[in-house]
View 1 (cartoon, rainbow, N blue to C red):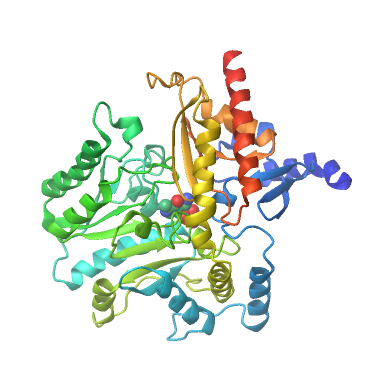
View 2: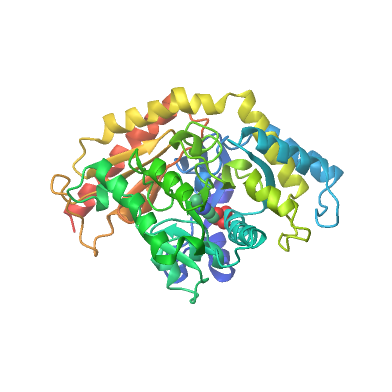
Length: 458
Ligand code: PMP
């Protein structure tokens, strides 16, 4: 590591000079210098200073099977040697993409039998926007084109994804957003439920969908979209009755139901898809991240028979797609990833063993901490709120960025978890062991103690 140590400053300077980072205050970062990540193995990362860190975020909610998996590396290498690229536009296909489509159809619920490929979650979402609108045109209802999403929902960063998501900070930049999109309130009971019971709040949040549909006119609404559990919004687990009500409302008004499974998909919640864990029967699903465990960029939309049949019989091209839709190397890696997940029974491991273990351990370790207001999560996704006064649910004033303070302590103490406002979130690789979960929880507690100290010193 010694040689690398000497290079850190030079690498940071190089990065600062030419690299604009996503979702980053470039000026502030360049003052500080980016951390240079140099290697990874299992659930651990190393930086150029030789610091080892437990990656409690699985990269960016994606490295589900952990780092350094030879099966995935080999799949990419072999495919690149044989056929590094060919497109799927020219009435052509290749084996990795055809096999992957089948493998995805096999693990998706219900009649989600046809698969459209893209490269990122955002592109999958843009695909869905165009696909559901096209679907209603085929049904003779071109006016049925409004999509309804949720405040604080995240659906990506392209213009379509940012518009459909409910992140106000994103809506402010790059105005105007895409039209024909509405947002309803999020089902965040702890933060927004007031005096309501969880059940009453769940019902009220679902009712908000019905009210909006009636306002816009059922004949004008194409689809409702939501993450089964909001991820980037802070790991918001909805009340237990929420999704069943949403499903009923979509059925009642003949509105397509879309679940964005970019985070919840591929075992994260203890089922192949979060829709299964939460009892949702979607018409379309978007997926990315865990599809290839993040080893290569690939995303997909799983399309139910109703929409897929309409597209298949509309008698013209669906004028949408990407050069790298179904990229052979990415498809080969995703296929190897699904096979590896099956071979290692990873979904069952999350459902029955390590998921419940993390959820229990987190609560045992953090519940009584003075900063921790609520702990939420299912399987290997979790979040908790940092509160000034947990008994009265008083938040820290806006000039104290408690999440950032906590995240910095974690980063400096060998743990990567992420701050979303004043909520801390985690989604470790699904292959994490019991001992590594213990380390994750203990380190989190230690860093919460440091956070409290820092705040008391302000
Ligand atoms: N949808 C959800 C639910 C996501 O969490 C994300 C990424 N965090 C996206 C879409 C966008 O994916 P990408 O960053 O790959 O475009």
